[in-house]
Length: 286
Ligand SMILES: NC(=O)c1ccc[n+]([C@@H]2O[C@H](COP(=O)([O-])OP(=O)(O)OC[C@H]3O[C@@H](n4cnc5c(N)ncnc54)[C@H](OP(=O)(O)O)[C@@H]3O)[C@@H](O)[C@H]2O)c1
Image (cartoon, rainbow, N blue to C red):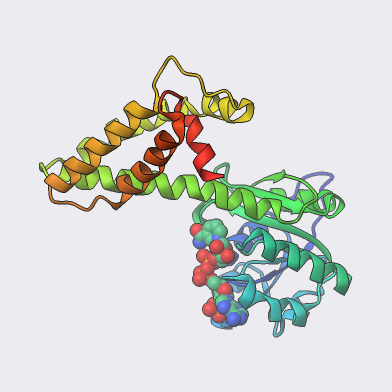
């Protein structure tokens, strides 16, 4: 709830999909005056029951002090934003850095105060300690809206380049997607011998936590360009990947996940990094 010294704001929310509805719900829960717009107005029902007002048009919602947009894509939202013409816009629709920069340029030409954001949470996490939202673009717009944005999740400002939040988003999601693909491959592999996910997952979790512990060291090697190692050389890891591909094939499952990594590691070995640390693989990526 809004506490002493905090002010109740009029917040417009454009888009009431799974995420937009969660954002509007958290703002209502914190005591803000929320006006919502969605292409399919019936989705607003549960929020109206909690005190939100329904706008008939994007422009009606955009008369609020600040507008938060959360539609499926930048392509789907541009016409909505142009019709809305808000004073202050916090754009939480996912996209590429280039799309975020284009949106910031459009906002600047349209006289709209703009900050871009990406949500590192699922809708159920919005408004809880599990929610973090990364922002980039205008520092002054971010500072002015920080209090209301804190309701949605921990706000982290990355810098004045509007594309930065989208860049971080895709980088972090890339870690998540490759980790999940590796986990699914592992489940398929142990599953060939009847091992249940519930048996394997605790071991996978403690292993992931150990692997996470390697990241600062890898990052430091990437930053310095010094790939010397007395721990584990790339050629040993490339050979291990060969064993994983061979075993996956022998057990009758697909091997596209480890084969993609093996192809990358093999290229790094061929380029002369066999005796170097795994961090040297970045030379084959960038
Ligand atoms: N869900 C998550 O876990 C999650 C996590 C982080 C970030 N995000 C991001 O949040 C954004 C919204 O995701 P979501 O999960 O809420 O998606 P969703 O449930 O599919 O909702 C999509 C929203 O976009 C609207 N929309 C789509 N095309 C439109 C158009 N042409 N004109 C007007 N409105 C249009 C939909 O309106 P209708 O209701 O009328 O169809 C709906 O409000 C996405 O960019 C997503 O990447 C989602």
